Length: 287
Ligand code: PAF
Image 1 (tube, rainbow, N blue to C red):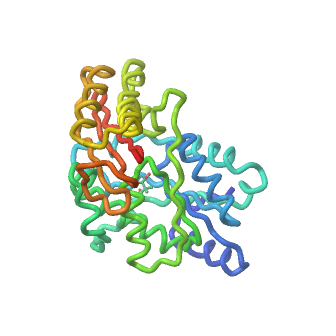
Image 2: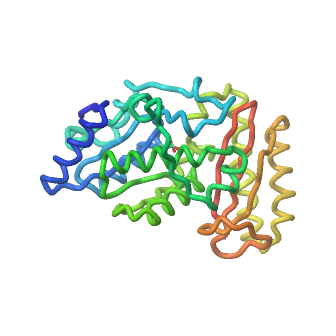
């Protein structure tokens, strides 16, 4: 596996791969990889000849007071987990692109990419400026690595929708793949931020999935009114994690992200909850 840090070297490597007639599958990450990321890497390896995994904790998507400085980092472990996911043969040709922040954002950097409406709701509302940082770094990664295929996880559902729209709107010739959320045995969605939780927090963090599952079961048994679902989800969260702070619970159309009052086919529920001070997100399609 090759580790590339400079933008020019990455561009040259991408040109060489394309020149040899091979396809590139990109998996953008912020590192501290877990089985969720590994599943994206495996998917990329199935869809393309060469896998590029970027590892870059992107400062511009963190707001003031958020966890940019403390975000967990483990480059050695990341490389091992990429190799493990790919197996010997695919790992040999794979590339880890781990640029320096100063190269991505030179001091006089002033060009941003924004997906206007989809970025305003849910996570975008709770974390102003977050998606501007995400879309800008991902556009840069697309320009630098020239992928044929890109794989993102459904766990960051709104991010996937925003980036898919950006890919279409800017005319990138990239196949955009969204892979399912990978969960721990008890249902907790895998996330690098789970590492912040202590034992009790880890257990109580199941409140997100339990509440989503409750909503899905209620929908299956005929309840479609989101006010009823919301009430029950809040009760499940309170019972599982009494100190939890619900940031939002939203029922929206899967594609448009527009809020819905009644669950119909394509309704997704997303939520953000602070568990022992750790902000976690999750989502589930309800019908
Ligand atoms: O999902 C993430 O880890 C990040 O938001 C991404 C897409 C790698 C951009 O920094």
